[in-house]
Image 1 (cartoon, rainbow, N blue to C red):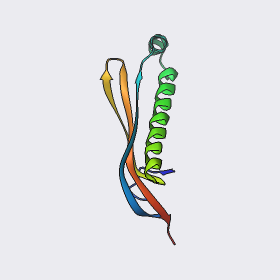
Image 2: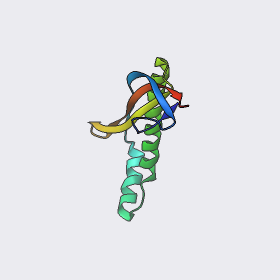
Image 3: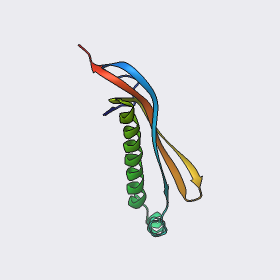
Image 4: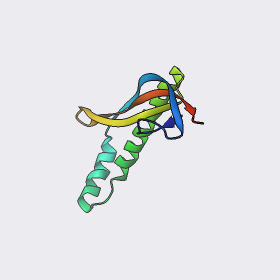
Length: 107
């Protein structure tokens, strides 16, 4: 599966558009991680616990979006984006979305 934030792919032409595909996950903070993050906030530096959690969330959202595109018969996703929103205190949704398309190599 080819994924791009561009509207088209330089070496390919879009032969069919299937439409919007998306994948999401909702994650809540963990008390243990909050304590470590609070301590790190006192001394400064990267909060690796949250960095890892967000990276895992992005990958899960992408995997779900790709599965949705594959179920439609797509082999690429164009105009891919991420968005986040608060769901409740201490949790947030991470959403990956784009347009599922069928592509063919140019030439």
